[in-house]
Length: 327
Length: 112
Image 1: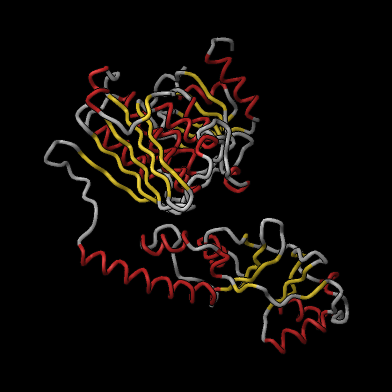
Image 2: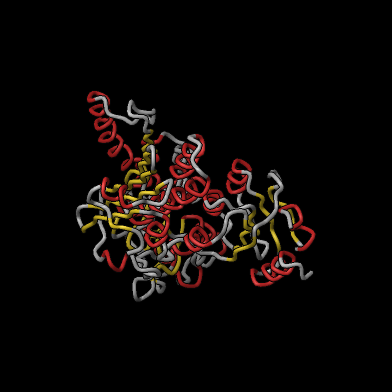
C-alpha cells in the first residue's frame, strides 16, 4: 500500500498545516544506496536482494540522477535475457523526482497520483540527495501530529482563538492564518477580508486598495515566511491591514521595498509570483505604511487605508509608528 | 464593449460563462500576478498565460471582469470553480498574448 490516505486539498487544517510546513528534505531518507550507469543489471539485482530494496537510483559521475532500476525492470531483463547488460542502457530514464525544498504535500499527492512506491529527491542542481517512500511520510506525520495534538490541547485549555465579531467600540476585526507554500489556499484570507469590507458598506475604491494590500501581504507570507497571520481591522475612519509572521525575516529591507527586487526562486516565479512588486504594491495602496523586520525575528507590516484623504488633524491625532505615503 | 462581446472579436472558447455581463474598462496583459494586481484597472480584461487558481484570486481582488488564457493552455477544474464562485468570466484562445491583446485593443478602441 503506497498511498498516503490524506487529502491534500480538504483535509483537516492542522494536518494541511503540517504537510505544507514540512519539507521533503525533512522527511526523506538521506544518502540513498545508488548504483552507477556502468553496473550490470545483475549486480543491481544482487544489491536489491541483499538490501531488500525495490528500486535503485542510478547516478552519473557528478552525482546527478540519471535514471532508476526498479524490480519491474529486473523482471523484464530476466525475461528478455539482457540481465548482464549495463544499467545505463536499460534503466528507466524518465524518472519523476521531487525537489528537496518542496512542501511534503507534493510528495503525498504524487504518491497518490502516480503508482510509484518511491520518489528520488534531488536538490536544485539535480544532485540526488535522498529517497522518499510512503513509509517515510507516515512515520514523519505521526511524529509531527503527536506534537501538534499536544499543542492544540494546550491551546484549547488556555481558550485562545479569534472570533471576527464586531467589538464594543464598533470596530470589526478579522484574523486569518497563512501557511508556507500553501498556494491552494493562498488568497482566501484576502477574499474574506474583501467580503467583510463590502458587507460593511465600505467604498469600492477603498475595498480594492485594502484587498490589494492584503493579498500582497498574504502572498508574501505564503511565499517567503514560515507562515503567519493577516489581520484586518475595520474602523470608523480607516481600514488597517496587519501582517505578522514568525520568520525568517528580511535581511535587506531597502532592497525588499524596491520594485523588481525578489528572492523568489524559479518554481515560485513559474506560478507568476516573485515579480518583486509585492511590498511596493502594498505601499502604493496604503495611506500609511509601516514595516519592521529582521532576520530571526520575523516581519510585521501594517498598511492603513483611510476613507477620506488624511488631514493634518488626523495625522496629528494618530501619533507615531507609521511611515507616511510614498516616502 | 462588453465581456460578452469578447468571443466575437477573439477566436476563443468560453471556459467559464457564469458572470454578470458589463462594459469592459480596458485590458491588461501580464503573467506576473503582482504586476496585474498593482496596475490593472477594475473591470478590465486580463490577457495571460497563467492558468491556475491564483489568477482568479488576483482577478477577483483587483475587480477584473474577465480572464483570457492564451496558447490554448488547459484550465484546471479548480480554477474554473474559483472563477464560477467569483463570477469572473474565463475565455481560452489559441492565440498568443500579443495577438490576443491586439484584437482586444482594436475592439476596445473601435478599430475593428
